[in-house]
Length: 311
Ligand code: SF4
Image (cartoon, rainbow, N blue to C red; front, side, top):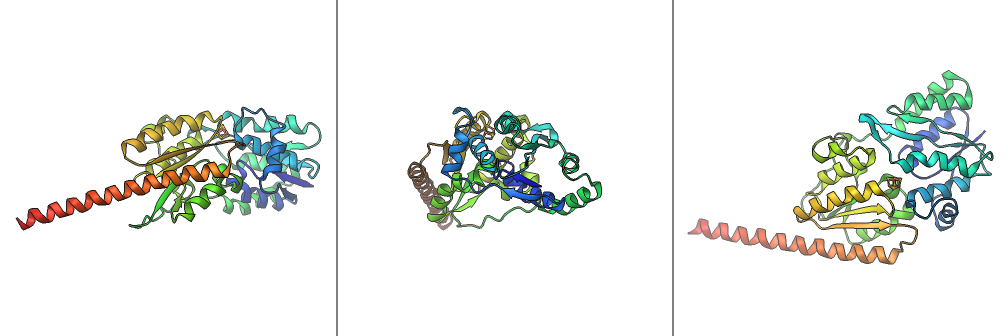
């Protein structure tokens, strides 16, 4: 039996777990190819132009798989711990997939509400009917669930920028490659939320407590943690994404208060590489000027301190 997984959205966090789990229960796993313009174009013909880019992209991946698979594996994430919900568009992608595929493909969509295990076990049983085999496959595959418990180092003198955005945007080269290449090309280390420990991302302190969307809370917590450790913050926001645009405004305010350059890059299917590069270069210039100003101030403080002691 051929089971297809779209290389989009949650795949960028749980993809390896799903692949090993499905292979473990005897499925032939088919993952759609990497996002490209043709694939995006396929997605555009199935969803409203108003919807955000990641949903347009996943629609393209689903269409790409139809005809090559027997089953589409598309978990529906409702909420994770602390009853933090996924955004409605992400929850609704299973319904979009069912409308797109009709009776051409069977859709298996475990509903995740808090725990990953029981829904995946049930989905495995739908596909292989052997509880021991499903349990074994799940146990083996769980090592691929990303767990971060170490805090990265932030050495003095290093040029760093926080590149914040949903893991399905940063993890998709088609979206993030121009940003990553421009930042690294200018000698900056890129810090993302996915390298931060769970203890930071899950924090409920301050404004984070009021955020009820699971991935927006992660983004905001990552911002709070990184903002004073980097030369600037660059936030990728999908056009038409309500949660992102709201949280990004709070970040922008806070970055301004802390005198950190903040760049909000709004992306959709029309976004061109040249525009992104130009905006990032202007942002880096600002970050460098700010850094030079800060060095000047600290130099003059040192001189004043030295004169005071000499007197
Ligand atoms: S959080 Fe935003 S970008 Fe992500 S699926 Fe929802 S609307 Fe789209």
